[in-house]
Image (cartoon, rainbow, N blue to C red; front, side, top):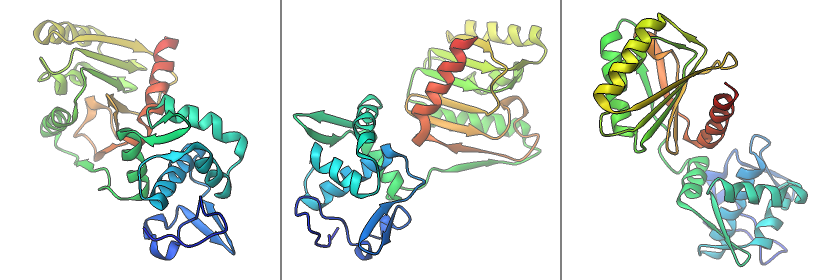
Length: 260
């Protein structure tokens, strides 16, 4: 990336004319460049880290240089330390001897933000494909799950909710389901017991009336599901990856889980 000259030799800002990946993220206003209001302070820190490394053409940036650029992009200096702490807590940045470095998780997030990686796929499940929809979800999860635990938030569950997880013997050890309503609880509990016995998967279910959205998580990955798993194939729906907010969604899941 070529960078235009600014007064500060240590922290020059990019020339938007030669940095198309920044279009929509940074706006030029006369002699100022401002981060878009849609970006969180945490994302602006990652963006500042990325731009500082790009200018220096090496990994790692001085804490003070990243902070300076963060402020020059229109953010408050007082918000910087708290968001650096958050970046470390979420495993996005490492800080050693006042030098910031991206982790692989942080790199993935900034690349996704910049549009440098392929957009998360959206899987479409059409109405009238009830049986094949379950098979599609099972194949999808089998290829994506790389953690021993699955967290499912689905307001409406029934015995059929367990169908896509029948083939996960030896792949996962724990399935936690957060729901608001259990349909035909006797049959649901019967299927739960059978699945646990046949697969060795520990299944725990908790009720919380506050939940509404449907999503599934495993490790650092998160997917939104347009319809309840028990109703897949009855209506058109989509499965969309939301890994950029996986950490926040996990915190929400754990909060609602612990409330029950």
